[in-house]
Image 1 (tube, one colour):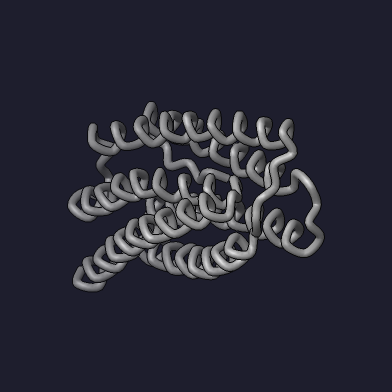
Image 2: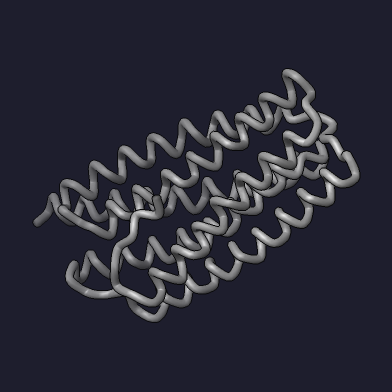
Amino acid sequence: MEKQQQLYKTAFGLALFTIFYNVAEGIISTYLGFEDESLALFGFGTDSFIEVISGLGIAHMILRIQKNPESNRDNFERTALRITGVAFYILVVGLVVSSLYNIWTGHRPLTTFWGVVISLISILIMWVLVLWKRKVGNQLNSAPILADANCTLVCIYMSIILLVSSGVYELFNIPYIDSLGTLGLAYFAFKEGKECFEKANSDKHCCCT
């Protein structure tokens, strides 16, 4: 029983770390994305802020299942999911419209160097979180925690898109690649938004992939 409680504390600590990391990543990415005129990096940072809302719901979920592992989602979690879903859909519209506008006007970023740096850091940290969350989830035999671990994979996919688009532009200066990368981010943001509403309306533990 003591080991179980320690594992729940670890899971809660990982949830808090995810929240604080996304806050920092969001601030840095949106600032540098704005300064460098990189829509992909700016959109990536905006997504990080939305992940903070999701992270609050995850932290609350862990406290709930710690008290009662068989309990279903409560109103706080469902509300957080719906708010997160709406935010993702708004982000999708903003990213798609901005991407198409940049393609139409031929806009290019000043540089995408920081997109490469931030995406590499994100891939490393998120992969460690996925493995750690899976380890805790398996030890607790907890479907909700394992589902959260799989959801973190989406952050890795988005980081890879940022890395590829930023790296290709920085190396070859190919027009529109930043905008195409942004459209890739919009695709995953749409999937996350859809997943949030599905979760809010059921008690299933979806894996987001």
